[in-house]
Amino acid sequence: VPAEVLGEDFAGTVVCDGWTAYPAFSSNLQRCWAHILREAEEAAEKQPEGEPIYQALRQLFVALQARLESDPSSRERADLQRVARRELESLIERSVPDGPVATLLGKIEGCLDHWLTFVGEPAVSPTNNAAENALREPVVLRKIIGTLRNDRGMFVHETVLSLLATWRQQGRNPYEELRRAVSNNELISRAHAVPAVETPG
Image (cartoon, rainbow, N blue to C red):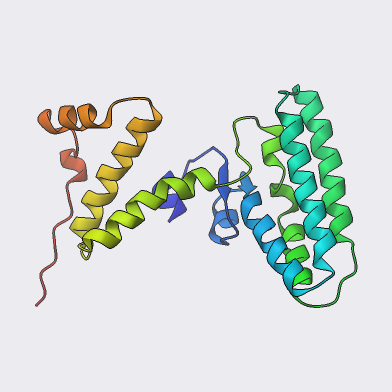
């Protein structure tokens, strides 16, 4: 799916959760801090050993965010990245009994190279909240209309909503852009025609 959506030659950074398809697709990742902080909080509720780890993670994230607000230089970002990595490594080295906290530390260790990409790259977000917020509207719409039950419906739905979201991000008027695209027959080229609906039998 990532290759289909982003293309085989995608060279950007993927801000993502822990889905195993992402590392298989690209080594340019930023793991989502919102996800890991939520998991750390849940682990702390289940095991007392998790509370100091959760607090340390949260304090590290807040400190990094505050430091990055001053727009540090590339060298300062690299230094900050090294210091933060050492702090994560010190968390990983803690001895904890088997359970949710050990699982949490295993996740942090397994993606150690991908937690701090945002520190070194100013354009990269530390969370995938923007992507999840962008998906909320289509998901709600799909639940309301309840008609996305064939390839044609899915194709039209994802194409139109992708266009609307892109135009918004570009500061354009989605309504005017959609009117222009429809009136000029620009929505779908002949090479990317809407797939035919397969009829049963």
